[in-house]
Image (cartoon, rainbow, N blue to C red; front, side, top):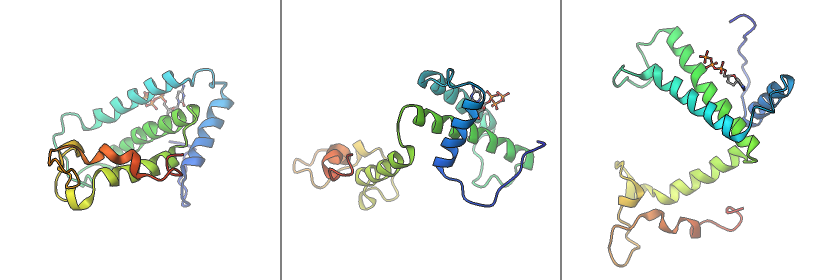
Length: 153
Ligand SMILES: Nc1ccn([C@H]2C[C@H](O)[C@@H](COP(=O)(O)OP(=O)(O)OP(=O)(O)O)O2)c(=O)n1
């Protein structure tokens, strides 16, 4: 598209957050960017993203057979999802980067590599050796207690 240029330097979530805020403010669109509206817009874009893969069956990683145009379209729909997600987080007062880092730590506790390697089972289906009764209680049960108080915010 005319006027669209690529940049070499890294992009941060904070930069995207600020650009979305500017974009909305310049158009007097803050009034439309309510949590519910943004969530619905996000879900709509997830639908558009899904359409790209719809009926194609499984596709190999890296999408080696895709035309450049299809790849660009994919990038646009992925971006719409990301931008609405970033905006929704901002409007809700959630620091998305910090929240995602915290969630990664929780995931690592819930899914210890030694228990989950090579298995796609849900954490509730993974046997935790720490459970004395030997039931299949999920390893995620004690997650909240495993984080330091600082990590809990
Ligand atoms: N009220 C709005 C409308 C749009 N956008 C921004 C965020 C998205 O990145 C993009 C979405 O624009 P469209 O609703 O026009 O959706 P598409 O770009 O997917 O176009 P189309 O639906 O025609 O495929 O524009 C926004 O922030 N707030």
